Image 1 (cartoon, one colour):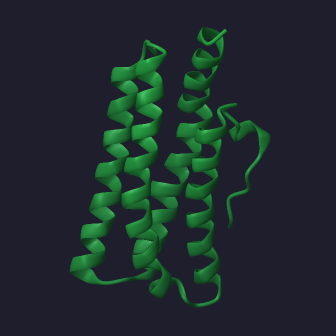
Image 2: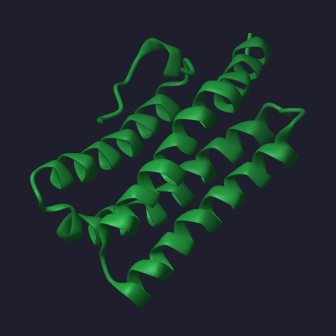
Length: 135
């Protein structure tokens, strides 16, 4: 099942929303490849992308949070660290065990669902804080 971008995922920050769309697209590309029997081949590319891109994206979010004195910055940074550790764990499994349908499932359950939940519950708060403090 592909993840659909919707207005409830919008933070209102163009850079953050664009980067979120890229993350969701990478996961959807993996799920699409799986539906065509090519998931194992796509898995390594997706995991490498997520590992690299999330660090960049989270860095952008954290700079904005510091710039606008986001009050929950410390916790938000910990959420990011947890996610990076999760992606690194998946990457290590990929390197040690090779690609598998189980690993694809893990990306879908641990990685994709985390991103969606994080955007809906945490990033929207950050965006609202930035909007309210940039006037």
